[in-house]
Each structure stands twice: as structure tokens, then as C-alpha cells.
Image (cartoon, rainbow, N blue to C red; front, side):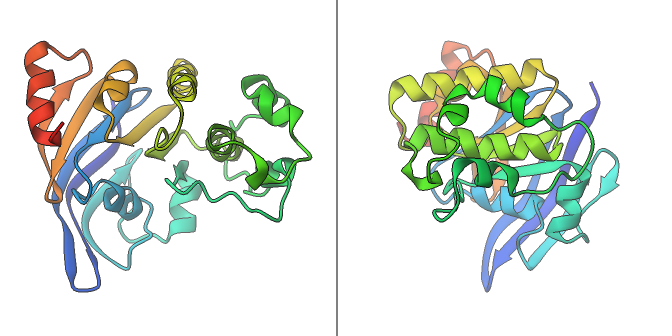
Amino acid sequence: MTAQLTVRDLEAWYGESHILHGMRFEVRKGEVATLLGRNGAGKTTTMRAIMGMLAQRKGSVGFEGVETIGLASHQIARLGIGFVPEERGIFASLSVRENLLLPPVVRQGGMGVSEIHALFPNLAARADSQGTKLSGGEQQMLAIARILRTGASLLLLDEPTEGLAPVIVEQIGALIRNLKNRGLTVLLVEQNFRFAARVADRHYVVEHGRVVDEVPGAMSSRDVEKLKTFLGV
């Protein structure tokens, strides 16, 4: 399978703080991959660096054969990469419908509103509600849904299950599997490796701003024990 996203020797800084120290990994078209690691390992910074949201970064980030390291965030988004941050970014002053329609369509292939409502029936039922009146799970679904409208083919999901009830976590897992079946590619940041094991094809373990191991999606008991050591669980 062809790599859709290729990250090589990626370094990044916040001011004088050197966070990424040569991240190297790839995500193949149509697969779900995870970045696993403890808090502060550099997972979210990797997402932000891929999206061009950091002023200081160097290395190589290739998307569908295009080098993006010198591009601005809006140019990277127009290539077909969508980012759903951990804080979700739902606008309190806008309704669910307005939040959904806010991002522009950046390229062909995005889902229409009726298709999104079929995938997320709760959003259809609550279209006129304020975005922040939704439950945490519904806000997460809205954040993902509006990216699907844009035509993005690679979704970067940062801690999509954080703070959600177990039943909602199961729904998010089913959604990710659904998106994969539709041919979309997902790069997932997670600390919950048991959730990640149910949805991902492979996992990259991140420590101190670099990938230190790769684990297959179908984890053996040895893999599970190794991840417990890495993650401190």
C-alpha cells in the first residue's frame, strides 16, 4: 500500500523548548494509525507540526507526494488534511448547523449535509441547538463531521475519546471503523491503548519527541505488556 503521509526527521519547537527530535513514521492510504505515548511525549505537537501550526519546524512532511514543510496551514488543509483538536473548537455562539457549515469545502469528495446527518443522526435532531449545548460526545461528532464536509481524505484526530463515557467511546470507535471502510485515512493520538487496539492497523509509540517502537494493530500479549511499560499503566 502507498504511504499517503510520510514524516521524516521532523523537529519542532515552542519558543526555546525543543519538543520533536526527529519524528519518523508513515500512514498508508485507507488505514488507521495511532500515536501512543504518555502526556508530554510530543503526540499533539506532531499533529500541529503536520498541519503547519508551529512557526518553528524542520524536516519533511509529505502528503500524497507533496512536500508540505514550507506551506502555510490553509494550504495544507486544501491538500486534503483535516485536523480535529482535543478541545474540538465548537463555536458557542453558533448553532450545530452553523458550526457544521462553517469550514469551507477545500476539495471534491466531501460528504453532503444529508450524508453527514445519516452518519450522525444526533446532529440532525439538534441542528438548531447551540454547539456548546451538546454533550461531550456530540461535540466530538460535530467536530469530526464538519471536517468530513471539507473533502479531507486524511483525518488527524487528537484524543477523540478523552473525557467521554464508555458507551460514547464505543460509538467513536464504530465511527472510526466506518470512516476507514469509506476509504478515509486516520491518524489518531491516543493514551487509551485498549481503545486504539480495537480500531487501528498499527501503532507508533512516541517518547521524548520521537518514535521508539512500532506495534501491529492485532497486539499479542507481549505487545500489550510492552505498551503498558511504555505508557506507565
